[in-house]
Length: 410
Image (cartoon, rainbow, N blue to C red; front, side, top):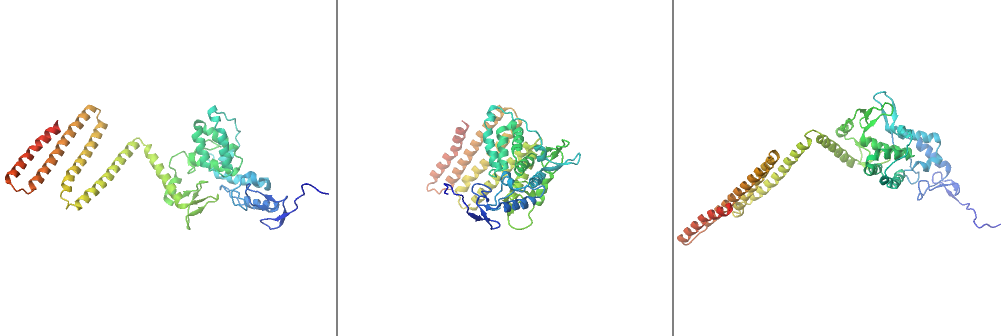
């Protein structure tokens, strides 16, 4: 008896137990289409039972492929895990968002409470409904570990603006993977920090877990004192004991310690800067500080140039010519500073304009007089053969200041 499609009875060894497994009973493409895994069902179930049983409450631990070692979404390993173990793993990752209520002393995970809410229909304007297909695409990439939670959250905030909270809750409830849902919710909690407990509705700061809301919490101050950094993926505090700068978090995220220290310092600096801006006269004070710093920079540069010219003072022609000009620059800059203060305190613009015009005219006369006197010194110091010619030069140059002054005054 012949058949057109004979059955493939070949077998291949399991990658874990090395026992021969028929191809129709083997587990292939476990984490994706490019996965090279070839396992038996028994080894696959044993691996995920052991892996999910090792989950710790409060940590955003991911399930990884035993061969490719990449994170796997829930629908990939769910057929090989018992339902009670799946529930235990979900409770462990949801415990990361747990917060004790300061009023009734009850602890409820925010992600678990949000998941139990009934999902109402999403009503958006027509212009925003056109952006939902792209949002679904980004959500799919996030569930498949191809997109960061920050990218998805920032897209919702920037695109849906007034409807961002509604779209965020709707997106969160549509994510069925417990780890992905908890990761997305934890990013939003650490971003806003102002939360209300599900039991009593009391305002709590999620950063330092205390009642009320404040911009700079104790967690940020502790980070500045003890060099505590936050994981870029799950945002849990991490302290390095020793070793190299390559850090692996419990959520299997790799990052550089020095880079995260720089990020923590920059975040603390920005928080202090925003706190100063919120003061009644914070913006004005910062503006004055910036002007003073700019003046110090300009002064240091000016002194460097002057010192360089003093060192080369043997150039008798360059220094006498540049010195009056430098003094004039300093006086002009001081005058502009005083004039700016007058503009800010006086409302008589015509008076300020008249002062500026007269002072500029006086400065022009002073500059002209300095140049003429310098030319006179050079002319008198120049050797001459005929005394009469020397007297004529002196008489001509003596008349020159009058002509220059009249021209400048005109």
